[in-house]
Length: 414
Image 1 (cartoon, rainbow, N blue to C red):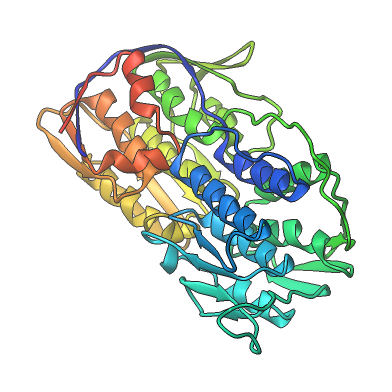
Image 2: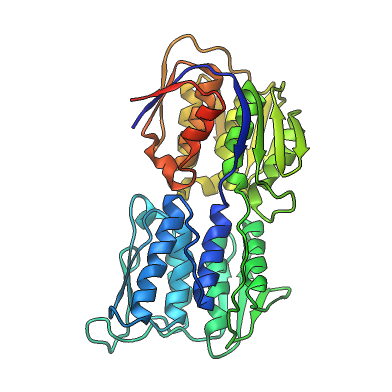
């Protein structure tokens, strides 16, 4: 599905959907505590986690002998659940869709295998098996111990281990080698674990986790998603005024940094009782490090395109292994918008000052929800822009089009 966008004045209020990052964690912790994990949430990624948990539940109920899990395109679902499956002594087959089979997982497979996990395959599809099993009917086999993990690849590996290791018979130690990326996401994991009764001790090397712990049910509400909020808030900065409700100022979500970044750009941002309000602003260039908040780069690149001066975004190499090669996608998007950009040594430079658009521009979503929504924001600010393949928005923000239409967005679906 494609969308043709007209220049629009965006004004009004929008209720931001629940945090996808927190939802994955709370759903898994609820499942492990033995209570309901179906919160009726929307979005392809959280539904992938729910469906996988449904199939694990069938296994525990004796309805199937092997849990067949489809992580769809959700890296969080795959990387969180794989260590848990190995710790729970279950038999599973795991598949994925889109670019997920191509995304990095070898480091996680290696550390799990070093500790007794019997995993067949080096990329999706995977099977959790035992060498002595017949037709995958034996156990996952994960054993407690010291787990050395490269902190520079994915914080999701750490999260998966933090969920799994409390379930083992012995004590474990996660040793993080190098600098840990996306630290805020690990802090979110630790917060959820704490609320569900799991004790994790930080030390100079990483995390110490006692074995034989029990998840204790907690009726934890899921806060609004700062990653999703960035798109309507960006529309307010570029085209009018937007109030985004259901945002927690004290959130541990990494993308809450959006607030401080747009303030640095000179954006007009005010706090309201349960969220933020942004107004049309004259933006200035910004320099920031995206190592711990890579998901915010596409929409920040759009804002930098409208800003005065040259913006510098450090730590962008991790964008290459997302739902698309987001670094390539962002640069192509900017090129089609007539915005100069340069890439060198993990750094993206964007020369702002985008002008009015007098002829239709066609932008590709790269089947990536964050690229699609960023392109739509640009289209509503400029007009005469067509964005191709926007059905991918359902991955994280299924009501995005409905929400922006309520705010005054003018568009046609093709």
